[in-house]
Length: 94
Image (cartoon, rainbow, N blue to C red; front, side, top):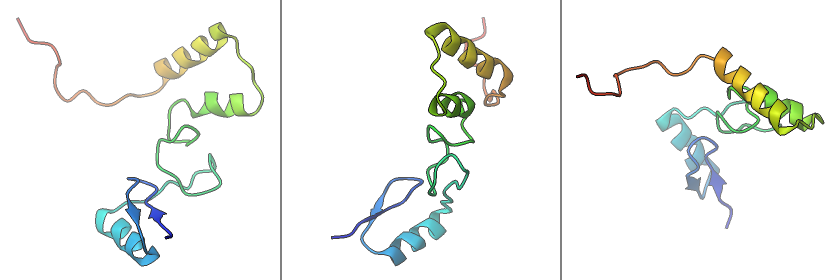
């Protein structure tokens, strides 16, 4: 039996029309960036929406980093990429 998997949430449907209806109902829009040759889940390892996609693309292109170079690259990405906004202070106030 042929099964179609939603690229965003991963649920399966047995009919293409059911998959399209599911994506429309839930607003699932797969990412179409050039990180993959097919529509994929946003934030996948080579997706350009992922902050470390530059490091992954360099490794895929043939860069063989030492552990120190890889750590430096990931620290640089962490320090230069915006994170999620803080919604609530995680520590109790004294």
